[in-house]
Amino acid sequence: MTRLLAILLLAPGLALAAPYERPIPQAQSATAEFSFALASLALLVGLYAVHRLVMRR
Image 1 (cartoon, one colour):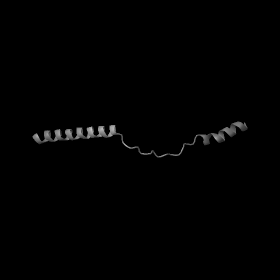
Image 2: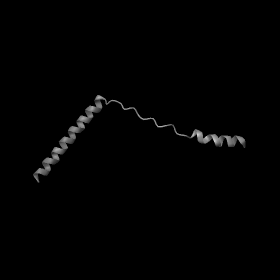
Image 3: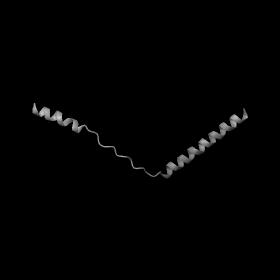
């Protein structure tokens, strides 16, 4: 019975979460910058296409 009591008293201590560790920012890779540039250009092309479509109406 004393073993069970000891286990039940120590069990909550084992379930405690670790403290939050903030992530360290990493530099962007060349691939990420290239894909961002392509996405930006695609957005600009799409915006221009919408502009032309709305201007004609």
